[in-house]
Image 1 (tube, rainbow, N blue to C red):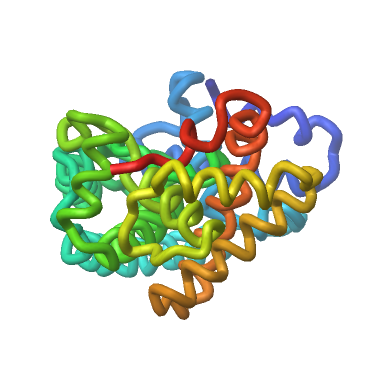
Image 2: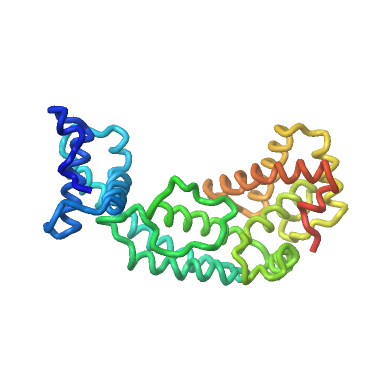
Length: 285
């Protein structure tokens, strides 16, 4: 691709896209150490994605003016975000519960290499590390670069902090019941624990026990069978509030995360009520 062939330049007037194209030329020159502004098409497209990511919100209202100052400000924001992300990574490593899986540990180890491999000045939209461990609530694909890693770590910290609120032996027994080799798989560990805690709250039982006996499933089913989908949502949200109260979860982010997990559980609960009962959802250990 030769950036000198701007389609807007032939129109004889300056447009926001001209400014973007001029910025691409500048970044291409920097990338080639002033040797050329001509790049292979695939590389030019990656640099353009990087520029759009770096401009961030400014890209939505692209001004017909030089974009280099906005780009430099965006790079500075990204570099600050990397420093904050590194601190979050260190917190995430310290937050690991005793029940953490090998996949979770390996993912955190790989994220450690992100800070050596990340290129904030040319490819800030990329994620140069392996993130295999699954979250209960995955990070949306609209997140890129350091924003993705930072959001992943924030969610992982919420999950790990939640898991550490339960006796390790009870959590291990439940996770072994849900997935016998959980320590060596990428399966999420927050979800089974949160699900059983919600089931116990629905049944009016102590949530730290984590085992949901058949009688508790029947009590929860009796509560939910007459409910509409909307009412089931509301009941599970009340259960989430009850879990937060019982465990002393006061942080808005952690509370919102459990509420979202409760919302995501509604289809499983509805299907189980129409089938073989809530013992398919809430496990007895």
